[in-house]
Image (cartoon, rainbow, N blue to C red; front, top):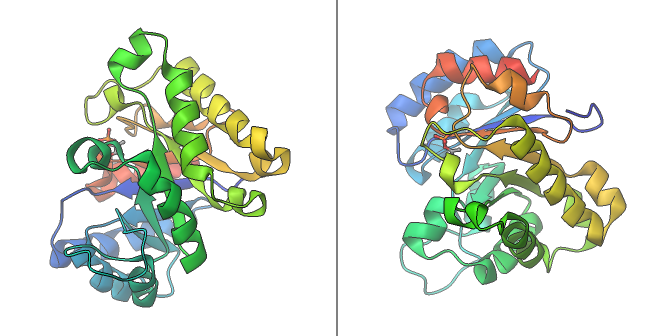
Length: 252
Ligand code: PEP
């Protein structure tokens, strides 16, 4: 980690936790954050956002959504927009998670609109990128990352690039227990930073790039110590306060 960039540890709850469970989690986690130097957030289901914001008001815990629509309003049944999230008090939003790309048809083209829409509304976007097992085996990791990063950031002005958080999440590592080797994580995260550098060297120095994929309290210290890794996006291990707090501690 580079001290110029404040580490971010974000827990992605996916489709887990009721409102009551989310509030109980926040109550148990908050005392553990009192002395933490890292930025910490949970990316929670839509139904838990308002109660979580109530439970965390005035605390250092950020509340993020897991998706948003690129338009501010319109005939898009079942969707939620960035201004709606901001009105609730939400701090940020995950966009382009591989599960949304795989199961819900999230495209780079939609992300090209979602990322600037999130920024304009005042949300911090966590843009997820990463290659599949087949792409890595075929030597196509860089090509895939280049396409995803370039397209999603295409309409973000250079001076706003460093406000985006990018999570490098190799698909083969998500929820599989197959964590990337430290050299693989460092190489890919540095490559993502260099892609931002193709647009703006200043933005590349400031943009936070996270690693995600089977992060646990055991492997977090090694991953979070990598030069270009500015934090973690944590799925399974964020569901329990104990394991999430241990990962947060490793980042601080
Ligand atoms: C994720 O959902 O973004 C993720 C990284 O999941 P896990 O930590 O369970 O691999």
